[in-house]
Length: 365
Image (cartoon, rainbow, N blue to C red; front, side, top):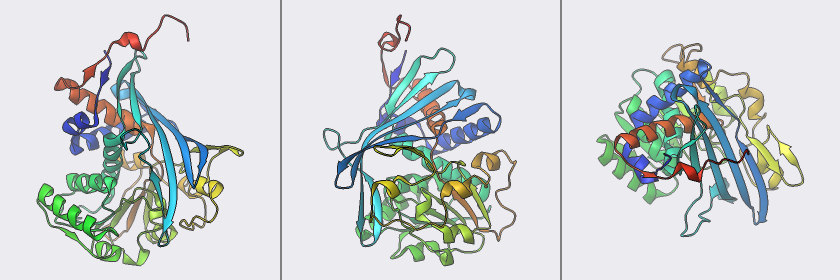
């Protein structure tokens, strides 16, 4: 019988260590041809004032868990620039100032739907868990100081995920909003029981840190290569937060996938891949200037699954600067995290059961 899960149920049952374990299983299954994932597809419709309706889908199959998934977003997206920083934001366009977005899980043995749930909480968890995998396999064994740039939704996952794989001695956190970064530091110092310090600049957060994480919605870089310490490990939410200079500074670079950009479908243009849609949709919007397309250089580098299964090295020595570029999310991550959340919810008898008859039919589709 299919089950409906809420964000609150997923938050209750899916701990960060459990999500990291699920993600590691998925990347190992991918390495062993027991999993597959499809590039993301984004379809745009302009609404005016730099705002677009975007229908986004991504899917993946995790054979080791017998689960396939589709993540579906139906969003209003707006780009804006303030003080030279360009950001891309989802609007609270649904009734009650809420967001849209859902995940469907399917059995690969019967094809039936197993679960459905909103994508908000699990989205944060799967991004953070993937970054934590890069820390686990690429950071120095003694890395224990995190420099975190960003204090939003993704940053809350990043700090918990890093601490799950490298128990931290200190966190230094920066975001442009002073009150927000102070509140974030106070909250996570209490939650994690370690010193979390709000600092006055991104440079102060990065210098002296053995792990650096960027978790922002910025389309322009938020740190500089000269701030990085020898032997540190960096991971990001998107490459534009870092820029080419940080990639050039790194001795070893690993990407999540070889295809850095989704398949974009734009009215009047058609299907476009390998290009940031902002270049086609908006003129005069400031973004990080990159020397070459991410797709061009990403395809030449090892993917994360190769580091997880040991076929590629994550670090040669303690002096190397290592970088994980989370250049594109994948549907497989939702299969992994979703399967774990469903299993844990079923163990606690949580969620709403709904009749399978609502989703199957006698008519040949």
